[in-house]
Amino acid sequence: MNLVIGYGSQTGNAQEVAEYFYRECLFRDIPSVSIMSMDELSILELQSSIKIVVFVCSTTGDGEEPKNMQKFWKSLLKKSLSSDAFSGLSYAVLGLGDSSYAKFNYVAKRLFRRLQNLGGRPVHKLGLSDEQHPEGADYLSFTWIEELFKVLSSQFNVPFTRRFRVLPPKYTFTISSANVTSTETDIQDTALTNKDHNTQCCIVGNKRLTSTDHFQDVRLITLDVTDKKLSYKPGDVVWIYPENRPEDVDDAARLLNLDLDSILTFTSPSSLPTSLTIRRLLTSYLDISAVPARRFFEICATFPTDEMEREKFEEFTSLSGQDELFSYVNRPRRNTLEVLQDFTSVRNHLDIRYLFDIIPLIRPRGFSIASAQSFSPDTLDICVAIVRYKTNLKKERLGLCSNWLSKLPLLSPVKMYVETGSFVFPKDRPIIMVGPGTGCAPFRALIQDRIHMQQKLVLFFGSRNENADYFFRDEWTRQENLQVFTAFSRDQSHKVYVQHRIVEQGSLIWSLMMEGAVFCVAGNSKNMPFQVMDALLKVFETHGELSASEAKSYLDQLVKCGLYQTETW
Image (cartoon, rainbow, N blue to C red; front, side, top):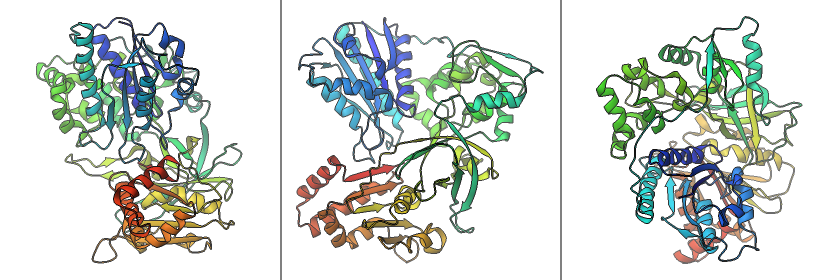
């Protein structure tokens, strides 16, 4: 069997799932298996040397392909490909998505259909993993993968018996005492420039947007981007690399038995600087406060001498033990350091060679840019809700990036880069914006950008209290081409949300839709997007005099034409 795993991944999630599937193939002694990004695959290979391909892909933005599959996707759309171009190819597709988006798993669905239209033979049903699933997206992904192995085993008459073994570590490296000829500053500077598209700017503003007695702390963080040669427009996103708290770094060094002043030097290629101190590694690169993934328990199950700890970790890695793993790790958001603290034998016998296999790298966090470059060219704003919450664990859970940003002294360096967002804001149509809470961020940028235009702008903003968290009231009341409708859920005896205001302003919304308006939604992905969509359907039925099925068809057409856009998180 010649099996190729191709991934299309924007933030790394799809790549992680693809790598998990690759390891599971090795555990089952599947011969000739390889893994690569989809852009590394060629159409010619799919038509000739590859017999089975499994694709794992996410959907980014408003139904767009991840960057490392865009070239492949364009090749797949060529009209020169015949309907039997892939007649000798068997395939399976697993999509990673979020059902709060109108174009849920759009890329995976299109890929599955396109391969089928070109003569490919699906060996398994289309997999649609969902971030909104109560047990997490991984549960659906792992279940689909286990089902796929059963299908492959049946079709190719191979047992595929799973035999776990520890694979070689991801990277090889040495750890030595601090070199007196190298300083921490030298190594730190190398670390900060490890990616071509990264920019280092400094924080020049940290303003609390909510009242001091309000339960939610929301900040307007301002970055100095003078002379950084950045180009961005309303709707674009800035990605920021956070750092771990010093106290967590100290805990990690203690639990891992590492000297913070020692130097780690890679002896194999990696995405990190060639040499850096353990302190810099634990501060800026390893996500020591992350909730450990299944891979962590797989590898660490081989370390303990205590039989009970070994059995517990092996249970966590089994499909039947996923409920137990979810209860221990995911539900309370127990992090890597806390797991190591709980399991003494695992900690004491941990093989440091697998450091980069058990602890992931820190991923950048994305924020909608909340200011227009045309309005303030030297500064860039973001709205940051400080993440703090309690679980059944004694220690409060803290969002890594939001808490790091909130505590940074002014003029502190911040490593970041800018990417094109999913929103497309035309200048020749009315724009209706729904942005409760920090969902208003991209719309603030748009409002600033169109301040001197005659374009009709309508904003539905929601929060708890007018006096506690109406973020930009003073700015928005001064703009002549902007109408703002507010929903403060706790300022009256009954709760009022943005979806209620949408229904109330149905006549205005319908008239704007008849002018070709773009309807944009941004904010929390849990319930709000679905409730807004339901409210809009009511508007279509009431003011457009459409039946329920006609209203749904009309909304589907708006989505297809880019006149209904969402950006939720």
